[in-house]
Image (cartoon, rainbow, N blue to C red):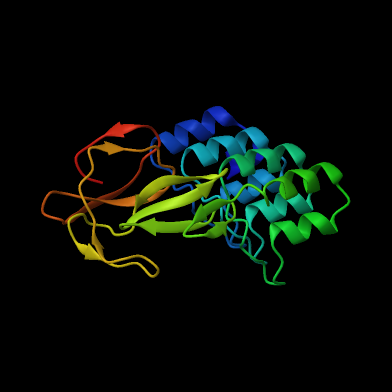
Length: 210
């Protein structure tokens, strides 16, 4: 967090590369990503997101990191956060979304950026889903990202297990031959289905199970 506040990218990368918890919070329930926004450290935010920081993380008042950036009028930060497909449907404690907050603010550039994503929807079974929405197709998690559904992982921690996510037909989580680019934490299982460890997939991998 101190390195983030100072914008010291070299120290941040060194700490994160040896396992610093990117989601740890302080007594105010703030993460390093929230501090990057509060202190206008756009490059630090990019680094944290690359190491798996939760794009939908919230502050103590329920504001997502995107809402916080909108409130502060940080155009560059909002642009960076939108590239990581935040869930635009999330509300703060006042039941307001990023769309609502952007329209209330006087920054026309930010309002235009946010409203541009209202039309960038993904379709499924005749329904439209906004940026950041998540669905499951045969137990594979997919996220609406700039008009297309992007694979983001399996719904369950283990493969080869019958599963049925709400709104999804009964199916079986299958083994995969190639891991897609992930920026979230998932449980990794061995061939027997036992949970071996948690990890962050930050680059493209080739693997037998995920």
